[in-house]
Length: 288
Length: 195
Ligand code: SF4
Image (cartoon, rainbow over all chains, first blue to last red; front, side, top):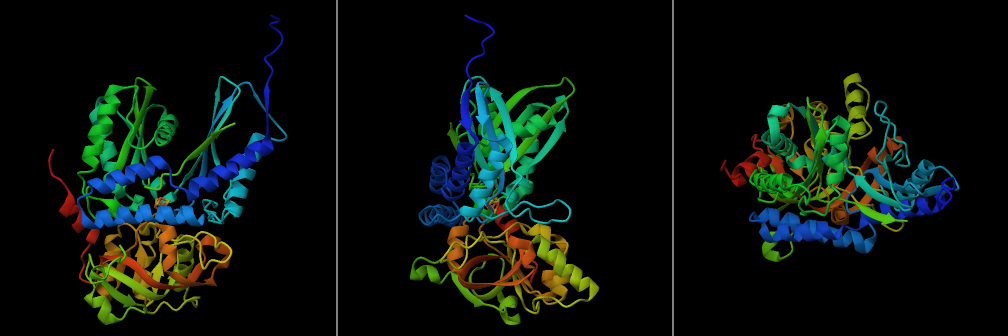
């Protein structure tokens, strides 16, 4: 075998990426994911508070109306967050990847009648097309391009937090921090919420892990680490004992699921991030 | 949170804007209401402008007296519809501006989440009321909007002030003129004290 000859790269047209990004953001914003619907139905069956049950029923009814009328599930159609897995044997042709994505976001938010919610941090002037998107890119083996679109609302994102704990704080310290964060979020984050917990790495990696944890199907446990699976279960119970309930109006179902992911960290640190996701929990993906 | 049967209807108080002093005095945290009439959308950027105008003594683009504000910015209106999706944004971000607005006539607020002690105090002092709407059911909530009109700050895009005519908008009273707070009460009622 001729070692100098590189493996043939698979070509993916930028235009195809644009179209995919467009469709994913429209679909994510108008059709509630199946795993979230199932979790909401489970919550409805378990909710003891009458007003809590009413809120959950309304959330499910809203999802039907949104889907049938191609309307956004929520008026806050989010910051356009994307996770990309780019196979190292892929070559994007016909334009820069970032531009292709930005154009997809632009088209989705214009043609899908989605709200443009991006602005200058100080002047607050709206960028008017919901760009720039927040793009996280992983280079992976293979010749595929996986695109995950995750429109993220401001209400729940604002209630998210990161903290650098001391190693001595340990697992109990992490749990305490998660509970504190959820309690502080109260009605603000549109409960029932989904709680993403990222542990380890550096400051920014903990945040990224927390957000990626939100991509796991709601209610599915961590399959890699028993300690985390146990922590998720324990936190689920404790959060649902807080009494916040659907829409914060009192009840048992404050969270639909806790999802934790962990990586090793520095000997001096114990970074932890809590990314709170509201009950609309939008995400859609496609692999090209 | 909206009546489905006629027995259900009894649980809801039907009220309309402008909210009279009598209605405001009667409403209590936990009351479920169906609100009809004209309300204005205003959130972060619009609040900043309204507040600035008040502080500088400039005229306002809307009449605040006995007005009700909906902390909301709808999604764009699809062809043939009155409005896109609409629902409450989180209210605490308006807290720094709210007492001043209440002093100048604001009497009803619709949003989600806790208010600051300063806002709760202004609500009590002036006999105002803070209603909670359910977040994240915006396609459903939009069905209560019968008419929408651009009023001010159009350059703010979604954050512009719009006048909405609503019919039977389902809300819950969170903070009332007596100083009660439903979120705190409800959480207290449902909290399980174990560990
Ligand atoms: S937190 Fe989520 S459900 Fe609530 S308003 Fe924001 S995007 Fe909508």
